Image (tube, rainbow, N blue to C red):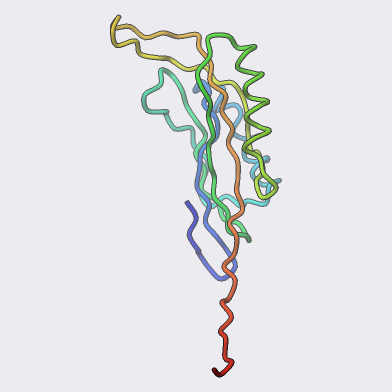
Length: 150
């Protein structure tokens, strides 16, 4: 979600990977440093927001500006019961999603809860590969007009 703010400045809004509220709060300074290292300037304090649909999951939400147009994106893969299998899938996901115009902000296997509707219970202890990245948006090139007479 990127919008032009001022000449040469572009708004970038996104979230990090899921974590517990305590982890989210304690990791905010490192998360903010990572964003700054990637060329983003925060325009609003980064906050830990509760992730809707997940049990006790929070993600750092940020609003920043950049000199180049970019958008924050999140890529996920299937849910796995085994964290080791999840990590292997995370490595595979990183090989697919991070293209030359994309920079990984965070990547991890995040714990998720899955609601089993038939059994009316919530299954915990499962993991999902998640990658948060910044994708540079190509700047529109001026269209050349063909002024040749026919």
